[in-house]
Structure formats: structure tokens, C-alpha cells
Image (cartoon, rainbow, N blue to C red; front, side, top):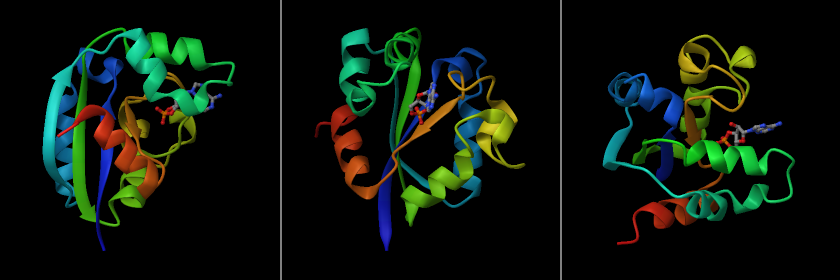
Length: 134
Ligand code: CMP
């Protein structure tokens, strides 16, 4: 079943001009980039986006970080896109990520881990709607 998921290329990767290389890693794996845009969000918007992590000790730093510079947000489409995106991203901590994953290749730390991806089909819908209201 064809799914859509939301992907964010985070400030650490955009700052290093890795957005095109990362997009290529997605398209090489058969993801279609349905929509994409480079934007910078406010801290308040980041807080809303990451609301599920509200109670976590890293919430404030995470929201400050995501709003610290330009990001690229994308709608990706593929068979089982949500899981496929998580596999291609690799583990949250780049040092734990498998060879061939985006975070292994480009991630710097648990915070500067280069990409975000929706963790379920349900959250993908919410996250896509957050950035692409139409
Ligand atoms: P992401 O997939 O964008 O979802 C939430 C982010 O919080 C995660 O990637 C990490 O970059 C960041 N983060 C920072 N500390 C932690 C932690 N201890 N556990 C999980 N995520 C963390």
C-alpha cells in the first residue's frame, strides 16, 4: 500500500548543503518527492510540531535547534513509506545507525542527526498537514 510520510532535512544538513545529496538518497530508494520547500520556522512552531515530546528533558533544546536555521520539508511517497523512511534514516543516534543510512553518513550527534521522519501513518498525516496545509 502506497503511503506518504513527512521528512525534514534538519538545519545541520541544510547548513552543510547536503539537501540535494539527501534527496538523492531518497529518490535512489524509490521515494517520490511529492512536495518540498525550504523554510525556517519559529521556535513556537517547532514547539507545536514536537508537542509529543513536550515532557522530555530535551524538548527545549530540540525546538531551539529545529528553528535555528533553514530546513527542507518534504512529502515522500512510496510503498510502505513510513517504515521505509525510518529504515533509510537509521537510528536516532548517528553512532548507532546502520551502514548506508542517512544518519550514519551525515549525522553529527543525537540532536544534529540530519533528518526527521514521521513514526506512524497517523502522525505522517498530522505532520504533512502541519507543513502543507492545502
Ligand atoms: P527526531 O526524529 O526529529 O525526533 C525527536 C528528536 O529529538 C530526535 O530526532 C533527536 O534529534 C532529538 N533528541 C535529543 N535527545 C534525544 C533523546 N534522548 N532521545 C530521543 N531523541 C532525542
